[in-house]
Length: 272
Image (tube, rainbow, N blue to C red; front, side, top):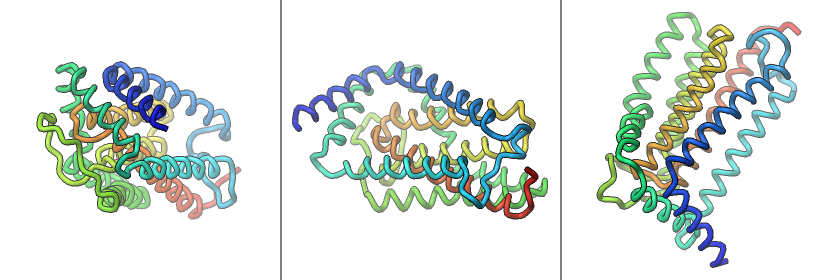
């Protein structure tokens, strides 16, 4: 077991030393996967536009897919949370990753991440939440407005609750390139970026012409990943905090979208 722990810590140190290159590779793979998944989804769905994309009351493949995503995210979050106890290999790996990242991150990248991280600040997401909600109400999309507010605000409450439950301290780094208060697990910026920009992508799928659908998904994916990564490069969170934030945010996002789709299709019949 100790040998396995040493390998995990060594792997984390290597990843921290090559964090920027790994981020580029991971981002490229996720963008490719998003585009491929979108293409496959479109082929599997009924011909036409996103007007036919729905979750019916009966369990179909789309419902099963959403439930599978939520279950996978919840299990992944639980696995990370189970490793928070003192002496677990994950804590040592987090420290090794952070120390290696501190020594290897180029100054130009740090400046870029210091700007990107503000895209998921509480003030930013609050202003975005209010602006989008008002726009949806003005254009008569009240159900979407309620769903949007519930998603963004609800994720904030969920994240604060989880932080309080687990009570994990932040990395002890006097040279951290930013200020952050409160507990560390899970990362609120990571979950907030997933939910807010994921919901914006969902709104784009519902409201914009088809040519904007894939770009909206790609931009949302890129923003969520880079904002989460910014918390690592600024040394305000451990790697497991960011991973847990992605997981909790994804679960909440899928739950909100699934609920909205059930409410939408329950209001009027959908032509087959």
